[in-house]
Structure formats: structure tokens, C-alpha cells
Image (cartoon, rainbow, N blue to C red):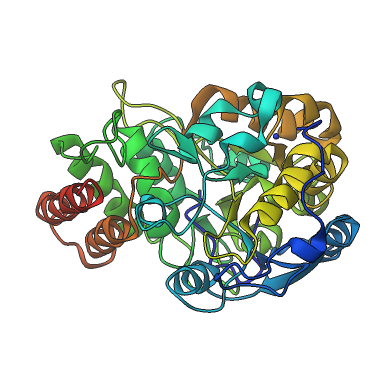
Length: 422
């Protein structure tokens, strides 16, 4: 889902239960004399980032109030949520349950606990790719809450007026960006950083590459084609058709709905607002392929519910996660489909996604099925991501040499993978 503070996300970047029983020890026994940190006995704290869609905060507070076996305190976290979670896991104030994407570092440092036993016979109902993305060393550390994706929204009428066909290659996207740029609107908006944050992975995918190799053991962009693909972002900047300095960043649809750009790379969650603004004059596309050897793509990500290993009562926290994200399918369906537009993380809940059953919603759902790529693999570390993003930024904004910049990023990514396996 989109972040209110627009700092989200590695999306990204991407997709639970019943019948396990809510028995367990009495609350009087929960969290007492455990030697752990966290909430007071009988209380759980649950952290969320600040979703931008109206109604989400009220809904998750209502879900928390429904949990019968503890008092759950929801904390809504505007701003840099990822940094706040990282700080908390390192020894700050401890949430018992929180949403995030699994990181290998957290597993290696035993900051989070395995959750395999929560899914039971409902495991096959969850989207396997997303479960895989939350799995480290064969163990599941996060229960997916919903599926997020990003696509290229465009105005067909504006493309027709400019004699532009919907781009199917990166070169066609560069050309369309240039030709659609006019006095009052730019051709493309992909964030105020010029697409560095949200287009880096799609550019690699466009060339048939990835952040990591298929086995996750080495960088996936140690290839000359990576420099070619990243160099295309420089070409996009050189068109003068990229919108920079928009009032809100890529996760917000404002630049597109207010007519500041003919195309915008943004999240599916914005579909209702975009359709409200432009009606039938909206199309959706995946990120195009670089060439015949590359591939179209849409990033797939999911925030998952995790349990802090330092929670005062780990078993109660796990039971709450199971209750909310495995047992309460009514809450899960509402969370995924009632606020913005998202795909449920479970196949059995797809019929609940009415707004995705036809039209553009169905088109995006099909893109996720056909060309969806995991946006943030668990073994892709923050340091590796920073190194790659910095490299791509220098290429795109300063004209630095792509091959030289990526060589340094590959070295950092390789060092990070070695560190994770020590």
C-alpha cells in the first residue's frame, strides 16, 4: 500500500489459517518474568507504517480491538518507518509485532522468530512467491498481508495526440517521454529522484538480469547488459521529459491525476483515484523490455507481519499474528481490497477483490501473474541496495560511466552476501 509519507518503498516493492485454536496460557501467565523486553503483561504492541489510504488506520485499530486474548496497542508510524524498525530491532523501543519485509540480517541476528507453525494446512492458499520472499534458510519469518505492485499508468488520449504508441521497449519509453513532454505537462513521472528508487530493478529485469542470481548466492547484475540498461535511465533524464520536483512523490497519484504528466510509474493502490480523475482515459503497462533478450516486468512486494524475538511474550505475539493474518479472513479481505486497490495474499480471497475483477484492475492482476518479479529478496541487503542506488543515481543524474559505477556496486553486493553467510 502507499505510504502517507511517500518514503515507501522497496516495494517494494510485493503477495494465510484457521483452526489452530486460540487456547494457550491465560493472560495472567503471559509475558510475566520472561526476562524479555516489550509490552506489559497482557498487552501487545503492533507497529504499522503510515498507509496513505483513508480508512486503513481505523481498520487496523478495529482489528486489534477484536483480538480476544490480549490488549493490542497499534502504533501508526509516519516518516521513515524502515529506519525506525531497524533501530527498534537493534535495541530501541520494542514492538511485539510489526510489518516489514524480511531481512537476512534480522534472521542471522535472531531479531525475529520463525512463523512456519502459524500457517498450518492453509499454507498452499498463500501466494508461494511471496512466502518464498519471506523465507530464510527454509524457515518463514513473515506472514504476507497483501500484494502490492507498480505499473506504468498512461493517458491513451495524450499518446494518440502525440502520435505515440504504448511503449513496449525501453527505447520506446525514452522516445515517448520526450515526445509527450509539452509546455504544461511532462512525459513521465517516476519519482522526484528521477526513477532511481523505483526503476532500478525494472531496468535490470528489462535486460533479463536481477538484483541477485537465481540461487541468491551472487549479484545478479554482474553483466555488461546491466550497464546498457542503467544507461537508459540517463537517456530518460536527457530527454528533458521527466517530471522532477512534483508536489508529492511517486507513491502518490497527484502528478498524474492533476495533469502534470502523461505517464506515471506508481502503485496499483492508486487505481481508484486515477480512474476517478480520468475515467476511461487510463491505460496500464508493465515496465518494458530492453530488447528481445530482456523481459517485461512489474515488481511484486508485500509487507508481512513479523514477531520481534525480544517481545515480552513471543507465543502470545505469534498467536495474535496467526489470529489476524491466518484466521481472520474477513479482516484480511477488507485490508487488501477496501482501501485503495491491492491483491489479497491468498488465492481464496481473490473473489473479494471486486474492483480487480475487470478492467484495469484485472489487467494489473494478470501482469502480476505473468511478469511479476520479487521486488526485495530477503538476501538483498540494505548496504547492497544503497550501493546500487547511489551508482544508478550518479549515472542518471551526473552522467557517470555505467560500467564503472556498477562494478563498484557489484563488489559491495558480493561483500554483503559473503558477510551474510559468515
